[in-house]
Length: 79
Image: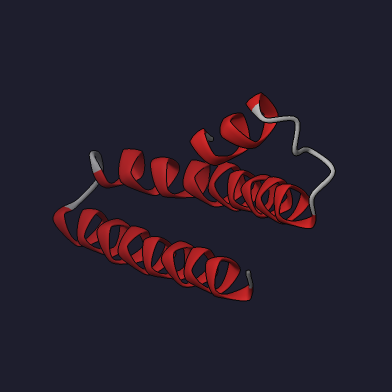
């Protein structure tokens, strides 16, 4: 991230804020990696099947996306 790079450029890696930003970034990456692959699978499933199955897959994908956004928001508000 830009913030981490600027802190590194100025030799400030030992500051608590550097560790906080780094930890938050790691958590965000973990959430996105773990959850978004599920969204992709749900959207892929929505491309096939009956209209009812497609609709159900889209509904599931929207719910998963809302869950991801909620987790991301919670992670950001913790910092």
